[in-house]
Image (cartoon, rainbow, N blue to C red; front, top):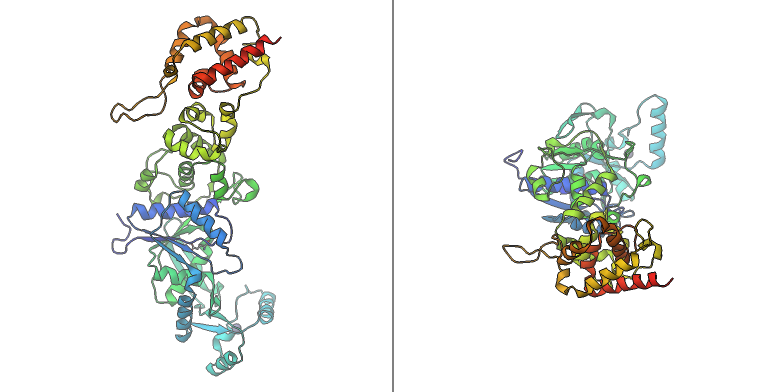
Length: 488
Ligand code: GLU
Ligand code: ZN
């Protein structure tokens, strides 16, 4: 099954905690995770926090809790800020082996060089000035404590070629590069360097990351080679775009994963949606469980073209999962979206879940179950017709009063285990009431009944509401409606 049967599959997700967890970046995590799971490999989480100014612990927490919310688990965890000594050792080794050198040029000098190259019509790159400093000169400058960066000796000619699993052969001309800086000083390695050292030490087999990193790849390959290591296999995922094909940005909608979770998008829906941002399964289907995706996941079916982030599609997935997910599981999540003093039940949830796009809408949909509604009397009139409304309501009241509490139950029980299942069958009260209302007067009875129970122009049906409210509360609401009608 593995692409390379000798090497075990090890991938890493390597976020920089310099901002809230981006939903697009969570797709990178997911694809790595699916790839690892599909190959029975390992998934490594590596926090790349060497940029001291921009990295913040709260962003790291946001990333970790986001990954957990999506159900992603990792086999190993590393934090780059705790590995500075390791990078230092490798920097020293490269200096010793003369694969890298200290560059003492200051900003002004470099700027003068750049301008000179520009005016000669050349693409600016480092001149290599310090590459040729004699040992003695270097030692003197070190003694003087003159600050330096570490530069890698990059071959002046030739090209770096790699075979990206998604984008195919990519060629990069070396003479454009110049000697690249790999560390600001021995304690401050730059991103490209620490990534490579870690990918080597962590035995990463595949680097799966966003396409925006493609320009770093040749530099990293040169570093791998300088360190005497073979580079991993690369796979660069397509960009995520707004509907107008511009790069996904806040201006078009939320980019933070946390905001989607807080808004009541279910992790199942988010995962399913993100999986299809650039990937498609063997068979033509859209709704897939995590284990189905794991089984089917393959980088060969990742597209090159940018993937459009379509919120309507995410809404569609979310609606689907809210409507079809196990009701008890949904209840567990849903309670977080209503005030804690509202005792949400599966009956209430079952009555409204078909109308929800996201759980943040739940509160307004269920409010009337917990707070007796206020509504104008006229709303009780079926098609605006007042005649017989009060009589019909009174008949319903008497009829319901005579019924038994258990008529309001609608629970289905599993024939095998006997445990309660989702409510689906009509309740006895529904059958009984429908049995006594004349066929051609349904609206005359059921409209005012529903309004009396919900106070709303549009709501779930009266029987769903009644079974959720129970006999006593249903009767009291009917009485309130009757009193409203009598007060004329
Ligand atoms: N730390 C980098 C980022 O957050 C990713 C590094 C990589 O995947 O190579 O964009
Ligand atoms: Zn220099």
